[in-house]
Length: 88
Image (cartoon, rainbow, N blue to C red; front, side, top):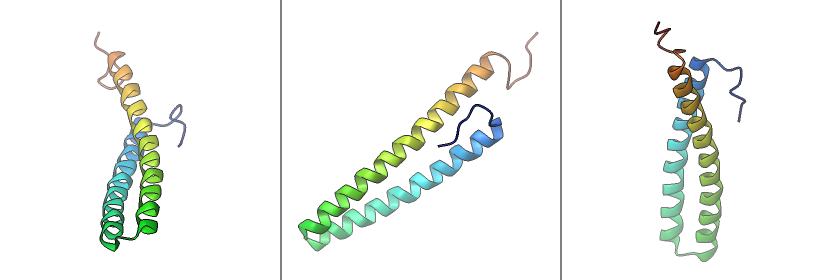
């Protein structure tokens, strides 16, 4: 995960959007993998699907944390007038 300290607002938004697309793709892949494992009725394939799903979920959680941090940073900037301009 990249540091957001010196990333532009547009850069943060772009990265969050990319993470969202990546998570959507991972969800689709996990669903297919779990369905295939379930249909195989093979305990080894089922365990493998569970293990892989847990890894992908951990990756998604990391991406969601980055986006949450970005949104919190944006809210703080709005409160200081950083996004809407000065409210003098």
